[in-house]
Image (tube, rainbow over all chains, first blue to last red):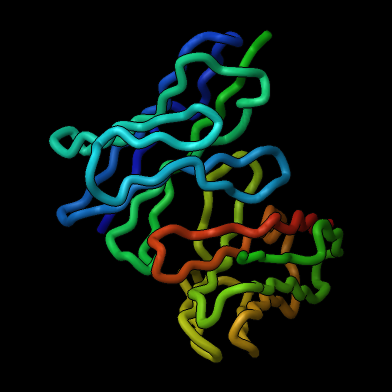
Length: 114
Length: 111
C-alpha cells in the first residue's frame, strides 16, 4: 500500500524568503505525484503534478517541485514567498491514471510572516 | 469547463439530527466521485467513492452513508449525527486525467 509522509506539520517563514516543503512517498510501482494547496475554509486546488518526463515541474503561483525517484521524494519549493502563500499544502500520490487510489499526506501548514 | 458544486456551504446541526450534503459536477460525464472529511487541524480522510450510478465503496465504517442517484450527483447522509461528525466535508471528482478536482467544501458543526 502506498503512503505519503510530510515531515513538517508546520513551517513558519518570513516574507520573501525561500521555502521547501518536504514530501516522501512509499510505493513499489510507478507513481503520479501531486501538490495541492488549501486556503482557509476552501477546497483543495491543484498546484502542480508529476506524471512523467522532466523531473522538475513548475506549477501555479511560482511553485515548483522536483521528483527524485531514488529518494522517493517530491519536495515543493518557492524561491520567494508572499503573505498570500499562507495555507495548508498537501502532497498526494496515485498509481493509476483515472484519479483513483489517491493517497494524501497529512499536510504542512505554511505560515508566511511579515 | 468542469465545475463542482457543494451545498450547503455551512451547516449547524444538533446531535441526533439527520444530514444530507449534496455535490454535483458539471461539464463531464461518468466521473469518479469522492467524499472526504477533514477534522479540525487534520488531513483528509476518504469516506466514500463511486465509479458509477448506484456504485458506492465505503472506506471507513461509521454512521454516514453515500448515494449516487444520478451520474453527476453524489449525496452524503446520516440518520443521526454525532459530535464526532463535525468537520469540513469535501467532494471531489476525477476522470482519465490523473488528478482529482475538489469542490468548495461544507463546514458541518454538530452541537
